[in-house]
Image 1: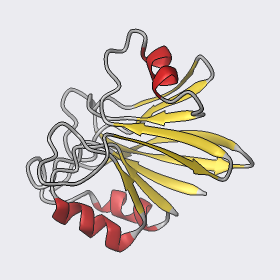
Image 2 (image 1 turned 90 degrees about the vertical axis):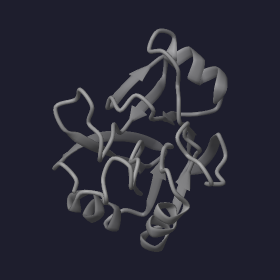
Image 3 (image 1 turned 180 degrees about the vertical axis):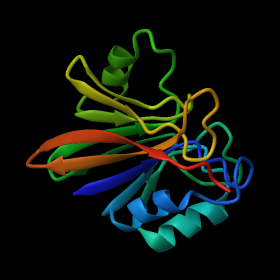
Image 4 (image 1 turned 45 degrees about the vertical axis):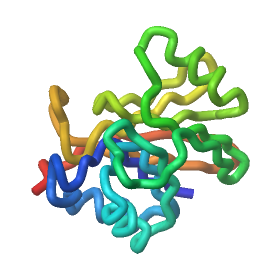
Length: 161
């Protein structure tokens, strides 16, 4: 199973649309996870017309009805999804307490891509496809679930329009 992962898209505030490469990856995936700051119900509906979406509420989401955290299971892999994972110090332990059964936790908020295993859990932040801040490029992520295991990839994108 291939999962496209976005966070912090901030559309239409930071960009009018996603980069075309991001749309292509989403169309080739089985599921989209959005880890918050989707901003509008209209953009969420746009994504939902392309692919099934699992999303959580971000600190900039207004008028969007989403949970603050989600726990899902895909092909035997348990995923936690939350927008803000807090400070980097102690993150793995905090995420293990928040999602005790999770094999991986997807989060956003910092706009800083992360794909690391710590304390037996995959910590995955796709960065932002539209607002790179101090990062070298805009990014998104993909997760591959196969035979009960999960791996992640950070994908560099062009600047959005």
